[in-house]
Length: 122
Image (cartoon, rainbow, N blue to C red; front, side):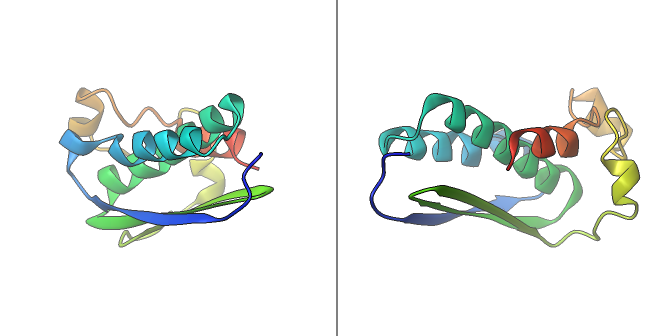
């Protein structure tokens, strides 16, 4: 990273609002590119952030994605009003999903969210 100061912000996510799905991760991607973050890092952060954003939209009434971009570190914190993950070890398995049928019918909830976050985050 070639940045010399810290950039911070947050995005409010409304649960169930699929019409805005991906807005936060896309805006963060734009911010990262504008401050000179390398393309590969931007790609990985955008994937992890998108997955967190979708989990908030699918499973919770609302949440916040906070970001901090500083020299040497990009930190994303997802906070939500959901019930939590009952069995994290099971939820980390590729393809495991608790998404309701109506979410799957829209093409979401394939059970790759948490594995993709782990794969693309440090």
